Image (cartoon, rainbow, N blue to C red; front, side, top):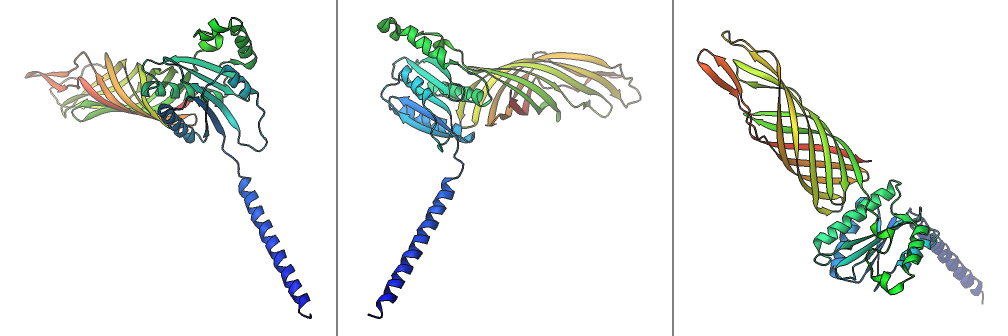
Length: 368
């Protein structure tokens, strides 16, 4: 009997220690749970297929490069009411912020329907796209480009699509003659809303091989405009002066020019994209002849001009609003150029530029 209080005291002590350890563990869990969640993009697609799985993986990689998480869901069918209902859903306290919702319906044989909403502005964007050969690699790249472009526009504060109220009115208008209008591809203004466009301004540095160990190089500025899968570009460059010729006679060349181009995206993965294109340009060169031989007389400074065609491939890497582009290609000059000098023995060449000149550029751009 005298040992009973001691036993009870020891038991009470063990219970107290166990309670404190449990509270400490719960406190640790609360600290971890309080970490800031990553913003999300919610994707609902229909119906389930391997092609959709490949698209989801590519989109998840692209969003991860922007610091976003993809939340995936599948349905047998997606309706216009689904888009409106989710746009109306109130946010859950403490849940990660959903910056955009995407619905992709590829149930039809020759057409897909892409819908996007921005919950903060209550906007609805709908686009229908033809499927020439089902939801193949080309169709997946097209949809990925539209989603990426629309998301960039949303994050930049731009309004895309139509307001939720206009979207509802369009739905009510199309439901009046129910069977006929439901099957029509052009159901209302939301279906013909143009895809967002992106403008990019950039500055960089480029180099072009002229021949005989001589390379022209210098800074350039560029303005690019994406529309659908095509990119239109315009640029201006001013090269550092270079000297050509030999020890007896030569010239100092100072070149500046402008160029127009058109390009298309071939492949994309995450924040990377492979682009190919071509263009045409015109260069104006200030030629300052110089001689060191006593029997030669230099001519006056003059200007020379020439047109060229360019083909190139480009690798783009995107981080947020910034784009780093590395391009390589060649300039083709239809008209041959030669730098000549007249001496006692007759006319001789001092420098003949290449007709096909390899070129490379590095450009840092920002989405406007």
